[in-house]
Image (tube, rainbow, N blue to C red; front, top):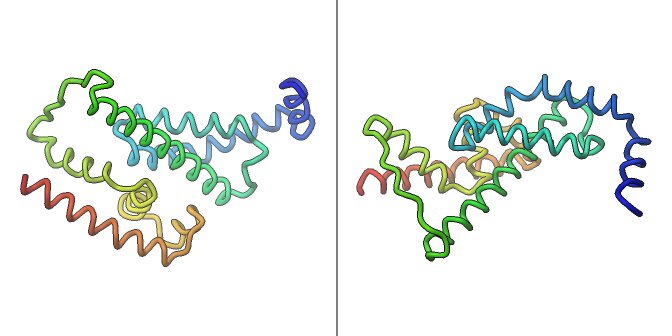
Length: 182
């Protein structure tokens, strides 16, 4: 079977106009929330916009996989966004290790301005967190998402969300404490 036959079978299942309209409606309803989540998971607003764009590109590639219903759609889109973030963090870790081993020329060190020091310390502490815990912390503390809503979005139990929150708070306190002492 060649690529053309696959494309034709998808087109038969869902007309392109309907898929495009649905994707447009998804964007209108969910892009602001996804941007806020992406902004907290990324280093800059540009990175966040790229993450949201990649999320919707993946949705456009497989529109039939998007569940029906606003809450199900949002959960699916958030999961895709978090997975894209994880992929980028893994790629960054590989690049960082390559630089440390000398395989790639190191970039010049960035020296933040004094008024950005607190922001820098918190961001650094957040970057050290595992992706799932970071997402849970950001959704709960900054987005104000309830524990049951986070559990539903990530398809885990509320007890697991509370457990992650407990662990991540300790990790943040330990990380920020070390940064202050350095």
